[in-house]
Length: 226
Image: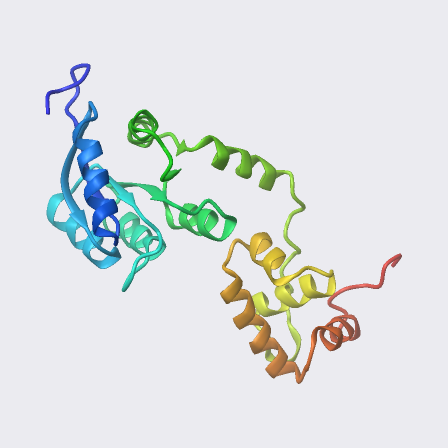
């Protein structure tokens, strides 16, 4: 590929577990100016190895992959190879996919309906130190900024609860569902369920109603009006 605007093409690795999709993305990128595909990977483990071997400028990272998913691969790449940026390219635009990926260090986030021009812009943006986000992702981030701040962490949780388990308990007492708690804490619903199971076991609780009464009894939350 020839240079564009006097700059060398951005060296890209494509990570996607679906062979047809991965090969299609590689073919598309080969037609775009300013990009050079130097390797591909079928899962997160292989993506990390490719980065170690090839030192690309950017990884286009799928999220739902076997062995090592895109979030964990992103975290490892950004920790071990900070010279490589990550742009997520995934089918999923929900909060449970978006926020863990951004927290792991991804600088860009696109869904797979993105066009070639949008991919090029995202790559150029992250290499310039900016964020390469799809418009829908930018809107969701703005919505998140307008949401209430998470409840403050409890300093001395009762009955051996961890600070995060106590925080989840407070949000249960506030009436939030598991999905709402996951969005508030920027974690997956499965992680919230694990915290709930743990705190129920430690506090001897059977259901959410008992959890609410327990939170009031322990002074973790105050009745309305107090």
